[in-house]
Image 1 (spheres, rainbow over the protein chains, first blue to last red):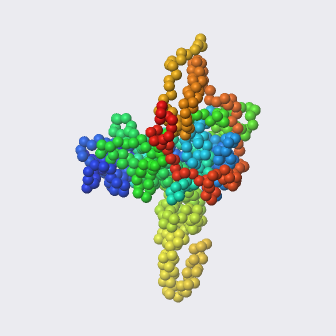
Image 2: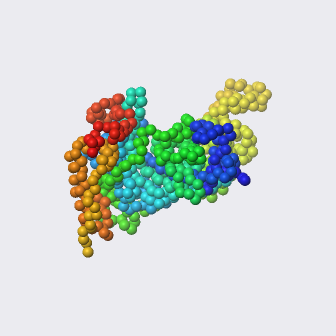
Image 3: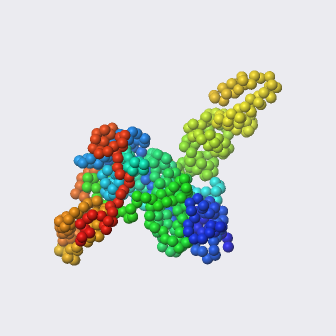
Length: 502
Length: 119
């Protein structure tokens, strides 16, 4: 019987037969069976009759709103400032202070809700969620638990089948809701002195929590969905969504069950710091749960942290059982009312009014639309458009080159993706840092089209510009040959370098 | 026709388990029988709400529900007062507030000094 690959949704996982792994008990971290990868390839089937597993993955994503000031106070939002310098009396929860809602944060949430096909609630409410922690000075977080600002949306994302870029499949994940809430401060644990240092700069920064329904089934899907969300947020400008700076945080809810049976107990996985680690963490947790259950164990409804060094999830300390958050309405904030063209009140100060339709009309093209336009306009393949949008500034670079060269866009794209991009990656440069400008590249491609230079030569020029000195020396050698040894190598080098820096 | 809803049960005793749970959650200390009695009286007072027939009535969100929620412009107007804020701190380390290492949960009922144990 053909083995079933653990591939995409609808795929089911079979327990990998671990040669020599010995008796019961989950594999220790790091000794994962090679077959647990979701990236295609046959997974050896275990003992016959072993029932397949269906993994279920849901995500809770917190995106920091890109704004000048915080959600409920006028202190600045900025990464890496002197500790406690961006903190107002309200952020520090001093008695007598009150929350005042930032208009920009509401607009960001409405834009995001519209981009994710949500229904925007014209009336939404604020609540208090109570728990004790040193970086939450008020002892509660203001959030939207009862009626959030946006509900019932969807996000479409794409995956490559079988590791080939040429076969892409589109999937959709439902968005349960988007809510506005406050961020907490930062705790620095000093275990040597048995204390925690608290910096409240981040306390009160506006967050959009995006809740994705458990429609995903593996790490790759989760990663692709989050990547698309990241691009959307960056396109809208509602969040810069840089995971490394904590502007986008993802918690994964993972469970497994047999087909036809009810969902299994889920665990929550936190401390995931990149999209790559998200895929790893989810896949590890799925595998861990399968092994645990097949060995007769049970899954605890617990919170686990992803350890990126070991590549595994571990139970999180400091999480004391089930929390009772004692939600209550935020008594200091009336309901948030949003309007549209029809319900717009006649006499209100327009600064106090948020018009959903006005925002809708001004939404920029979302990534999916931009990709479709690129394919249509330039005749490139869908997977090319994905690659262009995946790298900051690359689309613009491509379009600039196309404008300035006679070479057909379908050929240009190959040079952009296979030559330029790989050189940039090799030297860890961003498109903005590219030593090869779009002008230079267009020139090179024009020479190539007119057959005045060879494709090898063009690649070498680009390589030199991208910093490969070996090629520079080779060019000097070529010049020497051409001039039959009569040229001055030092002068040649200087001339070449000057030419290349133009 | 609006009428009184029956008060279904005699108000239930507030159990030790509930009191222990509250002490853990809210970090309050009922201290003695008088404290517990005050809680019971507060619950009894609030239970009077059950006497009102609310069939077909939309729940009220808050007493502010017909007020306008003021929207502030996204300008930086506050902050930069670390020194003032830290004046309130018992301990500080280089402009950081100092707190104990993580949450130390209240010991379980059997293990802590509370009059609830005697109940």
